[in-house]
Image (cartoon, rainbow, N blue to C red; front, side, top):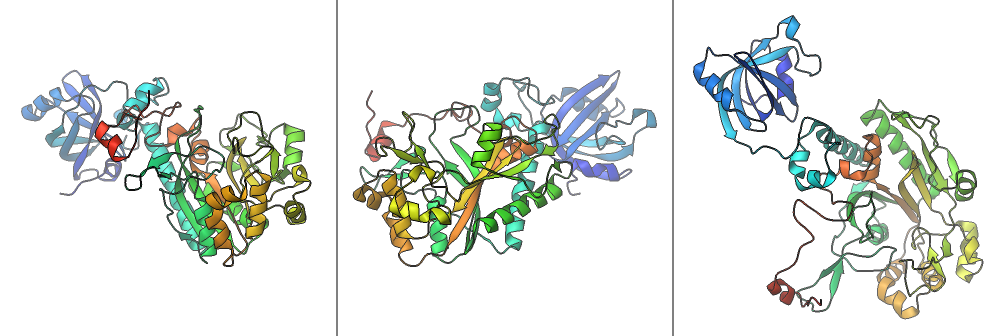
Length: 472
């Protein structure tokens, strides 16, 4: 007999089945023992009576989260005993044999609740248990459906999914890099990518034309409640496009995604409304406006685009962006963006810098930025002007970005793209308050992994191999 998933038992009345799962709960009613058995598909009730002494004796020993193999017959429940709260509530299983595959220690917290009443640190420490609860199991399934739909959509549209390197070069792009010391090249370091930005542009130079990736990204930022040291982007880039082309394909994807994956959700306005940065700031005092007509409706989705951002802004005191390098200006979004066509001359002449508008477009959902992109500078001389405005000298430009400038010298197409914060999008769709609830193994708000006890110290031997010394 092959395994039957618990959800399928509802259609197998009077048939024999073989089930595997965890003890979700037990109830002793007089001499009858009821065990709720759980697998990834659902919960079913097992019924043990004293008539079968050996089985009953085993049932008396079963405890929460023990792992079982059960063979038995599916039976219709009496009408008075039907449980409408679960999918298998019309039936129950009468075991004929039972095998304990694994006993379990008493869990440190309840798993039959939504978990919101439990302290986050405890949940993070025992995340493999936390993920057993129904709410998080559903979140993981939703995340899977979202990413699968994205992949299928882009495949139909002729995009190629291409992985880009995780070990790359440290370049100043806004946030601090996580760095990896090289054992073979003493004193040199790799960096983990803040995004695949440079690689995806180089793929456009390579003639790929349509690229996407569900990409891991890393930023060593100061801790904040809803930030993670590593996070996931939906990253895409297209050649021979203007701003409208990129926005159109992304808007179509989001509309189809909601329609197919979250049909219970309602998009407030199609096509998505557009606001300039100036309009958003004047009317809503933020460039991430929440346009919902009824903010208390959890199934209402108000998308909008914000466009026409300033390309440059005066550097704030103590800002991390190009600290000690840029004396006056920093970029608002991305140094690889192109200005609006009518402002290209200003960029090339390095004049009216504060008035230059970029081709940046942000996609906003219910008051959160879920994505941002732009049309890129595809000519070396234009990209070089951006770095000059940011205060980088010739040597620094060549050192950090010479590979990009050289690549563009071999004939680069016009191109543009976008990156979504996939964690944030899934969190909103799941009605979750933060992205940790939709990431399988997240870090805490202060960037620790309590389950693995990281970050951790290295042994002295490892430090020597990496040519490192810890100074106290």
